Length: 261
Image 1 (cartoon, rainbow, N blue to C red):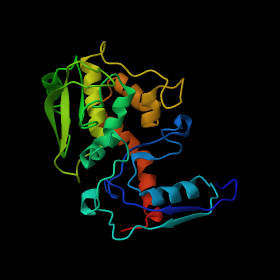
Image 2: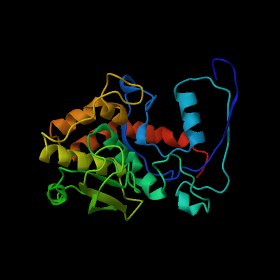
Image 3: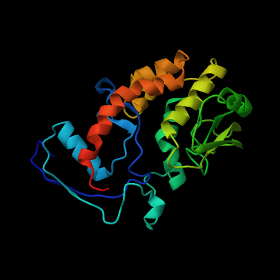
Image 4: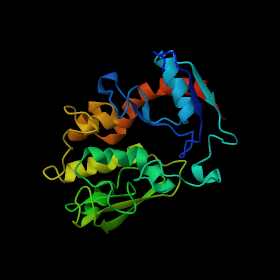
């Protein structure tokens, strides 16, 4: 639109999982793709309009952009505080509960684990036929996972990964939205599975989202260093601490693009 001098008007809408919590490493330009074009943490806390303002300014797009704010929304509000009906942003996000865990569980698309597609609870459910939930729970016992309960489940996807096969895994129940860290939680789960099942767990190979060379997990995390750290068995707490150096400057500038308090 900037190249053609076309004005863009955005009718803003709430961020369904709130506008306060921010989490994750920033996407590196070398890993830009259709999945993520510019540096941004996995959970950014912006509304669509705010995100557009952020991209337009930080990437110097030069677009004639106007954002018409939503009325009555506050940053601390999740979608169920709006009184509006839930309209699926994707066929595989039928509920707000799925959206709550999505910033982490979407990473499972880059693996051979089921992210619950083919069930009635996509992204809330995860697993594979070779998993042993109790071993995973024991492996995670020293990893703090605030605001969430991993409940052991069995499920059989009707389509997609492991279709028609009985999978063992978990359903993620968010118990405290304020403290829950979806990105960290799924990375912890993946790290545990990678350690326990080194010959059965696998990173998904391309193609993925019109990309035919780079690994899907690297596109999803925006940095190959995340996968490399998991493969090396690096403590996840250290990995989280490392990305704070790049997340802190983002947090300092984050409020400059806010349209809501």
